[in-house]
Image 1 (cartoon, one colour):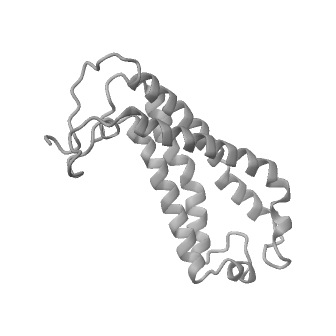
Image 2 (spheres, one colour):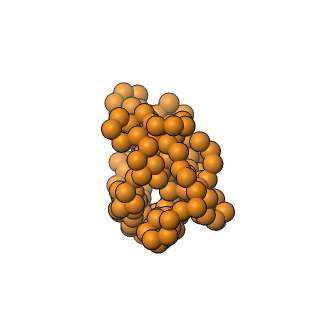
Length: 187
């Protein structure tokens, strides 16, 4: 389960794993926010986001969704990204069509890169939309938030690099020298 597909260079494997780390700091920051830990918002600010309450479920869910989507990048370098796992009825053991992974991964890489650039350009005016009294006066909180969200700028480019490698490897026309097994052994 943790084996990389033969032919995947170390850089692609590392880039796929780094995508998990790009989402982790912001997810932990949001979870802390959802738990009411002071991450820069006053009690008034937290209540604006519905914390405690529905806002807590939202920031937890967003953090889990981001990490789950980043986890899918590993499928571009692992056997389970080339052969359907045994627990999927009707498909188990069959090769996954390359475009079934390439198209959503490429779309995700483009979207994440565009969103990252937009966020970077809007960073200077990020607090302007916040009502007065919702954000702490200390600049420390802004620095911590920026440090937690900065790694997200790498998510799109890392996903793009791994996707391009996956596409070149899977669409090259060469038959692989290995036999892939579905996750968990025989189909």
